[in-house]
Length: 134
Image 1 (tube, rainbow, N blue to C red):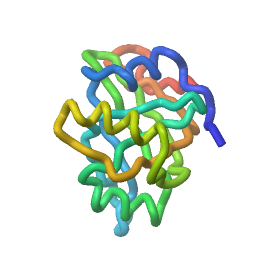
Image 2: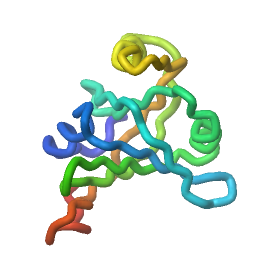
Image 3: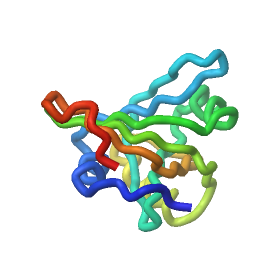
């Protein structure tokens, strides 16, 4: 099930290889756990996919609590996307596409995590910071 539509400027930033991307999840003790993301894919189904490469604790935490948040920014523009993990994908064309992207960084994903978007917030360094955009 796809989530809410993510506005196009946010999608473009999420897809752009030069934007900064962080995924935050909830650890077993209730604290945030954040990782830097090397690549993110947005599927035709509206799902957001992250390659499971070196995500040892993150995957464990997602199995226990599917609530997570992406922070993506480039320059002064930024957004947070609240998501729910819909599960782990261990095969298929999206995984193949992800590994083609990761190959450029000498990385490989054994699987993907699929996320459904539930809210999008403006986190830019501007007067619109803190506004909900979707």
